[in-house]
Image (cartoon, rainbow, N blue to C red; front, side):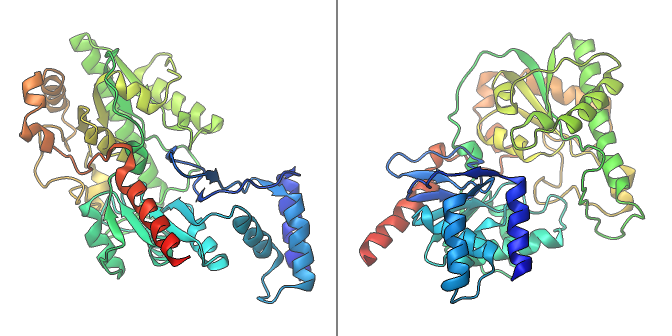
Length: 399
């Protein structure tokens, strides 16, 4: 008992105290509104666990000593009161926060929709903790929205049934952003996937595990350096300009320490001062003729929106030695016009030239549209919002 009270008091020290009452809602977003979801006909609130609501904490304290029939610890009792104070009928979460299973356990009456961010298995191997999270999210959800049909074999592998609750909806984050046509400023934009020192790098190897997981981190950043250097040389040779969308400038990843490391990494490659463009990746993509990426989820999101994307899932000695399969379900077995796996500067130059000089007719052709277009674009998330409407309708019929 005392341990539970001590834990919550330690949490109070780290968070802001609020004397406000929680606003009532119909939909509760558990993922800090990661995808900037908007609903016209429903009241929506974003779960805020970064502050302690004093009035609700005092209520939890009272219940803990006098009305705690389910014998919840003080922290869980406080969270249960917070969740129920929003009065939401539906909660929406993405698959990485882990909040949905906790909410369902404490408030089983709330309906849950989960949507996927990031492909489950980029190299055909699931991190064990991620596998457990997918499973627990699936079990508590009314609907489980996945990026594409490539995820279905992975769901089967985990041992989950392919049921009606699994819906292919594309990228919820991308779907919520309207497609806008803007004047192009940059010839090439590169999506940085730099990994900072000290990052927990869960790089999973298929056949053998390296003696030091930093081998994977170093190898990955070498690929990043190679691509940046190649783009830089291409721009010098063909008089093009380029921009880099920095990883640690993204809203969900912003970190000054890691950002400085990322800039240092780029400057060592290009051998000059790097000018930071204070625009997010989406803004930069909209004003760029060609987007280049190693194999980021954002590359697939941008491709689904009709943008020109070159994928460079380079296969190096480390990946080959440890059996990492970059010819996974995300990419075809054979190279397409917008894929290159080889450390071959001239071949990459050739593909960049081809993609930058596509005429409008070819861009609209079925062949080009099919190139590595794993995700479908669902304008304004009509699928997700249709499911929300369906749950509310079922709720009203049960009242």
